[in-house]
Amino acid sequence: MENNSVLGPHSVVFKEGTPASKLYLVKNGEVLCLKASKDRLIPVFMAKEGDIIGESAIIQDLNHTYSAVVPQYAHLIEIPADNLQIVMEKGPDWLTELATTMILRFQNTSNLIAENRVIHPSIIDEDQFTSAIEVEFKKLLS
Image (cartoon, rainbow, N blue to C red; front, side, top):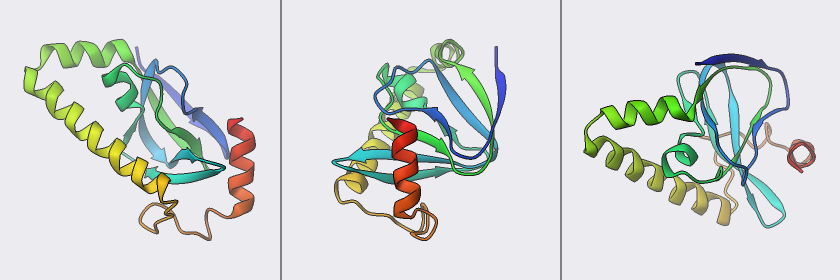
């Protein structure tokens, strides 16, 4: 069964390294996905309307590989892991392989972004992710 969640500014959706039990469809708003890299948080993806987050941990049966925080507002649809597993099992085998390949590519890219500490304007502008906001998000995620 799916649940709707409306989250306000600086809400944590999930934390890097924690077990995954659901994935999230962004109905409205934005969710900033962050990876820890040494003593920094690095934005690796800004999920917007229609995007899905948390799927990689579900499909690969891993803990979350990044954290997800709401900068201002987000309306999310929570989809339990079991629901995704049922859909994946009903589909052809190549669908799981395709999803896994895409997830691995995203993880490799996000790891490179985090390792090189790149804050790219296609993800978020540096003036939107100031050192003060980074410190606040670190506190939220600790």
